[in-house]
Image 1 (cartoon, one colour):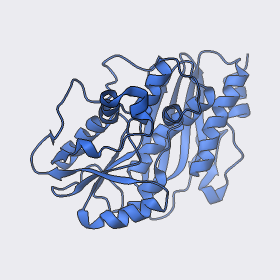
Image 2 (cartoon, one colour):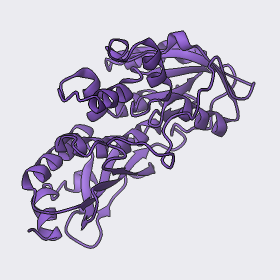
Image 3 (cartoon, one colour):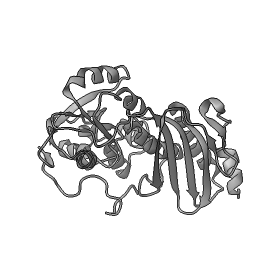
Image 4 (tube, helix red, strand yellow):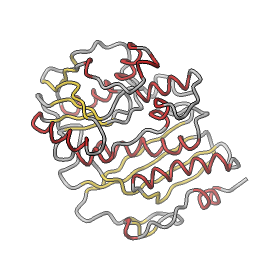
Length: 319
C-alpha cells in the first residue's frame, strides 16, 4: 500500500517544466507559482470525470487518463485559448494497482506533452474513482471566443464530425473491445480542438465545444447570444462508420444528442467562411456549415424528441 505522497512522487511529478513554461515553483509545495505571459488574459476551466458516469468502469486506464485531461482542454479550445498548465485531483478506491496507475499516468502525461500543457499540482485521495482536472490557458485581450457573439445571419458551423463519441459508447456497451475501432477511438481518446480554436480567433463570432450533444450545446450558444438557429439536418457531418454501426436513424440521433464529440460549434460571419476553411484545412480538419443563426427564437429544422443531450442528474451514464 502506497501513501498519497508516494503516488504523487512516482506517477504525477513530471520533470520540472522550468521558467520558460511559466512555472516558477511546481509540484511538491503547498501551492504552485505561475508566471502568466504579460498582457494575456487567463482562461480557467474545471471538469470532473466519474467512473460509471463519464467513462466505463472497465475502460483502459490509459484512455481514462487521456479523457480526463482532454475534456477540460476542450473548454480552452472553445475559448480560442492556448493551454499552459493543469491541476489534477485523483480519487482512488485503492493505491496498490501499480499497472493501472502507470497506464493512467501515461495517458495523462502524453496528452500534456502533445498539448504543451504542464501538470503543476494536484491531489490524491481515497474514494470512488473520479478525476478532477483544472486547466489554465492564455488568450490575448479581446480575442477570446465566447458563447455570446453570434448574430442573425451568421453561419452555424462545426469542426470535424459528429456522433462518434456516442457511437463508440454504444459499441462499448454492446461488448465491442477493439480499442482500435474508429468509433471507440473517438469515445475513449477524444481530441480537443486546441489548434482549431486558435486558428478561428478573429473569424468566429461565438463558440462552444460539443460535450453534451449538438442540440444541448447549441441551446447554450443561443441563450448566451440571444438568437435562434435554422438547422439543416442533411448537412450534419456524421463520423465515419457511424451509420454502418448504428443504422441511419440512431446515427443521426447520436450526431444530434449523443455528446462526447468535443468538436467546436461556432458562429461564423459568411464573409469569413473561406478563410476559416483554409485555416482548418491546413490542420487537416473539416469545417461544415450545418445551418444559420436567425432572429427567430429556438431551433428550426429539427423536431425535439425528449431531452437534448447529456443531463447529469437525469440518470444513465457509461457503465
